[in-house]
Image (cartoon, rainbow over all chains, first blue to last red):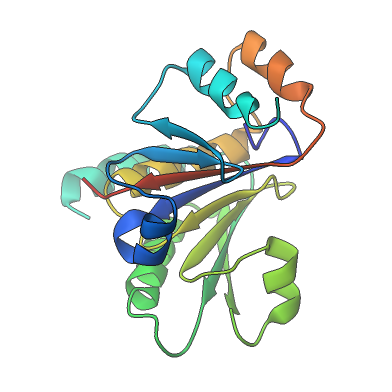
Length: 59
Length: 138
């Protein structure tokens, strides 16, 4: 998604190395995706569903 | 990385057809995982002449830290013709390593691989979206 739009950035975070972020975003399982600090996606999702959830962050 | 993983990565990375820079951020003190992360980055770069590594220091190289928007180390920005905003934080092992190699091939190919429907939706985004994916090696 980051590749397709300059407004979008994407980070992969190794959860075990950043306990502060794990606490901040209440990561209790992986993968967990946090979009704009407010939309949370738990687990892996099919592409269409993932894209829709990410776009909820600016809806 | 085990030998099977290494063979697969080597084959994938050997096939990339355009330059990719792995911009690596480290710091001198208080980062136990920076050295192993840099070793993996170097290993990845050794598989293809198209991959180069730049290293910056989180504390000293303030211009680059600001340019790439990095706040933690170890961090890797995967940069092709342009920086599209793809970052990896921590030691890239296991799933993270696979994701990193995918990001490198994607950036080199200049193609996200997404469906036309997804591309159309994403093209309409006109405000910042920051996606953070938390993962573990296994």
